[in-house]
Image (tube, rainbow, N blue to C red; front, side, top):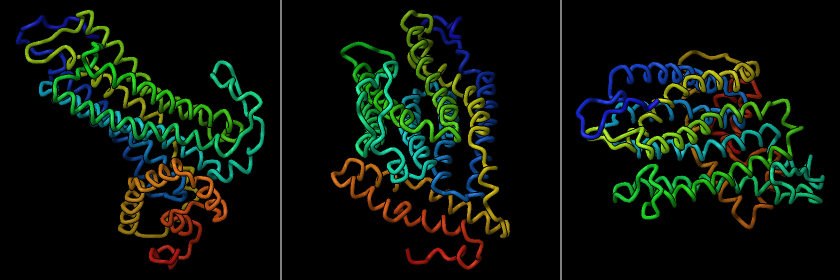
Length: 371
């Protein structure tokens, strides 16, 4: 894919700089984004189960974020801005894994419902999944707390690594694919891989405990679809780094070999994002929630409602709250509080759930009710 690269020092533009490359990637990226933006709009319009659809919409945002970042990065390849767009994509990857775990929690009714069902039961273990240490163990509050902590730590470490990458790139001690011990890329990559492995391990532990309960929601299919893009992204990066090291990808006029390799990564992502958008459209259909939604209002009111729902969805307050409680000594009291209340202690969720369970117009239009 990176053959016939221009020789060092030539002024001939590389393929990635041509209108053909930009048009191909633009068509795939924008069609993919159009599909997902429509899907997001429909979920926000038929917002009948906020506790689930909040996570779904956040997951779907992977398409416009990855698509837009990859396409703009490719357009600006000669400006060496790839590191900034790559950092944005990397940060969202961390939140994607956490959001998917939370969606599965909410499919099953949250921590209290899961504990009521599984607390004290023998833990599943398997040698192939490196969970043999769970032999003779049982499910407990700490087990599920670890699953959350494992994904949350990635939400913290990945953005920190992304910020460090940008800073060190500016200091000229970070270059993609350079595994020299004098370069920061090696150490950031090691930390990243340890962190993402721990996050995925936490997700695996949760699935092993709840796979029977989650069967109606097809979590494996959903996760494979989501993770496929990230796996392609990772292994494409490895292959491109090898091609760079073996001089298949070479420096061309003012663009270094590392930047060109990242450009090919962006090129491939723009194409892949279209197929991801199609897969996600079927993996998270809005028709399931449309059936539970009573649409009795004008187009103008619906538009205001969609805007409000979007604001609730992109508000990261619940993520920070969850992180604070999961790493707090009072975690058990936090779960007990949610159990006693019978629902999330997020007031916006309570108001929205009430609104969608009751067709009374006065209640639907009453956002200032006491909680």
